Length: 363
Ligand code: OGA
Ligand code: NI
Image (cartoon, rainbow, N blue to C red):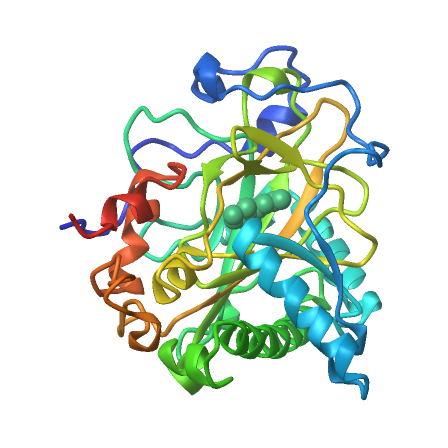
């Protein structure tokens, strides 16, 4: 069994410091094997509007009086969960001003002096704070990013001392942002539950009801002189329940796997990018799939994104919902707690979909 570790295996190097060193090459530790390298064109802005994109769903009519509109929105979400595992939502009810404020406050944090950020340096025990790697394997090839990880729920894990104290408004802004995203996630969980043919509370209850978990990783992808050799975040599926990503409004980078292709997401203005995580794949017995994604970097612009993770209570077993099982569709996964499940990514780092795939019960 995996056991968490208390120290990083090597001294931590901040990618931002490397980037600010005005180098024209990157250290070997960030160079991916040729098969993992991205295809990068020189343009990082969102001007490829004729490309394929993940579905964009307008939630505006969801609580209105028009039942056809409501049914159509529910269907679009159902299709997106089955076919893509990823979709964007607009008219989601979260204030645009709050979204911009949250992103820009975090950008400001990453531009604070290194001494300030170092006060929050994290360790692999809980990952909370300022970090620069995922996984504790000595000699691993690393990703071109720094991040900040923090908890919102349960309240027992929410610890303001582990949140930055500057910029001055940040705790207030992140508190409000977290509260809004917990509400939005709860609404989406009800929709997923109904779309699976269940009472609206079933999925949320399986997640622990009032005791769900919520945390956030803010990703900072510094400029990179050799973007064609590395990745900002290696291919992975999110280990938790559901993720709501607030992407950078200026710089593209997120790529989603569709069959053998990587589709670069073109975010709609003030949209959240929602994706299904491994725990919902397990609960839904793979009716909904958590889909691999990764991040590419570029040489002329930094990128900031806020990934909000809505997770099951961490110590209850998560397994396929009994209501979805039939003799033809027996349970694909054995029960496992999220505490145990997330040790994999915390020890080994991002590894595509290898974890959820390896859990499949033998046939
Ligand atoms: C993540 C993630 C994507 C991005 O944090 O899990 O996939 O665009 N982030 O930063
Ligand atoms: Ni992710």
